[in-house]
Amino acid sequence: MEGFSRYYDKRSNEWIDVDLFNEEDREIIRNQFDAEFPGVINELDALFNECWQTFSEDHPDIEKPPYCPVLLDEAWGVCVHSRDEKKAVILVNAKIVTEHDDPENAKDIIYHELCHLIYKHDHNREFWDELDKYDHIFKKQKQEAIENNQKEFQELLEEI
Ligand SMILES: [Zn+2]
Image (cartoon, rainbow, N blue to C red; front, side, top):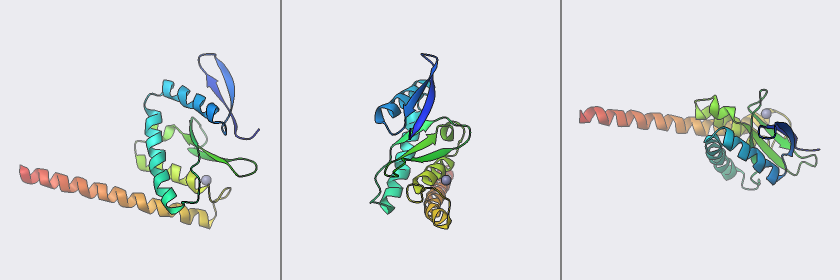
């Protein structure tokens, strides 16, 4: 089965098989996450949507993929393609929010998976060039944030 996964349901104490390409199944996982880690889904949604916004401006022809929070030990994110390669679903490891305190790292992971919508299976030169574009965008945003903070701090000092 494509997009097959399983998760442990604490209420029934059993493993449940889910199809990640099925919206209702993804909803089950989201609800479970929301119950277990309150607030994490909202943070992930915000990060994913922000990255998608930037990515889609460069790639208006690409359809927004569904994404799903997961808890994995072996990867921060995964881009799963259907066998016919017409569909993709992005799995985002919720640990990017719970274990990374720097949202820039989390965005880096999401951009990485979004780039796999174009370069599906490998990390070739073109893949890294594509990812590099977003790296520059958020480095610039980060720099601007630092400068704004310094400006505010300076103004604060002047007031004193
Ligand atoms: Zn990759």
